[in-house]
Length: 449
Image (cartoon, rainbow, N blue to C red; front, side, top):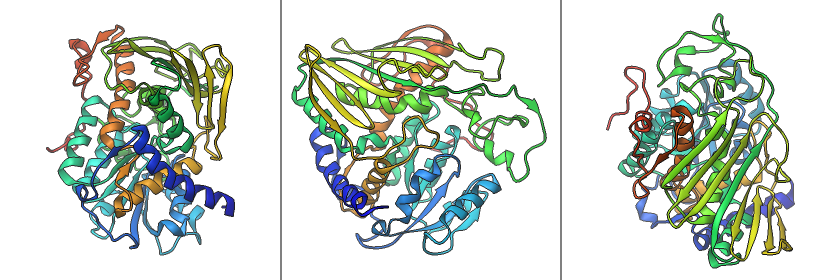
């Protein structure tokens, strides 16, 4: 980490708190609202839960001495993954992190303060509320929930246990995003009426699942965790769980659209839509094992006739909008293109008015992601736990609403029809859609209210 990068993170991290309050990106709350676990300068004990492709995004945050943390446990259901993470961090973190197969041992340790939950989607919400019940603060990766009901439950548990829960949609902490959203809310492009969020990747074919022995070192039962039990099939678990049915993943929309749809919703200053329409299908490698759509066009209509569109292409890398991911916001007097690299402001004639490029280094479509933007987001999380800030950039109640857009899209695809939504509480009027409001749990894993 260079001196310049350190200085940038420090300045941007401080700026994001003030900027977030101005832009409405975060919910300001009194410091007394959260039960503080440590003094502002005390060391915190953290756990890395899930050692797949995303865990590397947190390395810099746990190594950075300014964050003053110890990694007490490194947990993954695959032995080789937790060992690799331990090897990656060897000599870079203080203390001796214990390698775990079962996260519940870390939950039971009263000295643990913080959980970084980077597990597969079906573990996100259950792992988080189990951590909350154990008295831990949680950084929960997107998607924060596997179903709409789980998002509601997360809000319930966060309020019940009064802990800090930050969702990992890290662009909420990007200084350039905070800046331009604030300007949009002040009217820099007039009255905003539409946003187009997009993602394009060139994912290749995946194997057709076949019965196979469980790989050495993998706890298949614990991988499934809250999900109903099925026999192991090759090769459905290592990242590919995203594409094999709905037991574990939330498809590309839950996987990536979360980020861009969140920016779109933030810019338009809307909450729940009142109508959802989706066209989605598997368009590529029709004979491979991919079970879900790989191409989606979704439309969300909000009160006041504001519209958000999602253009998701998992297996066609054509950069329709000049980039592989981002959001375009339209107003009566201009438009804005914003992504992880910054933003460009245009007037109504399409002339560039301002171009602000980010000093951040944050991955786009690369597996795992990570970079300065994640570092700032984690710093904001730590600062709220310690009471240094009372503005959390992506509290779970805000993250849940953005996550609902991805759930609406997936539900509309699964029932193959559009539906109306109660814009006051987010519930769907369609009975078939509401059958997918919750998910099925393995016996003994159901949430206990």
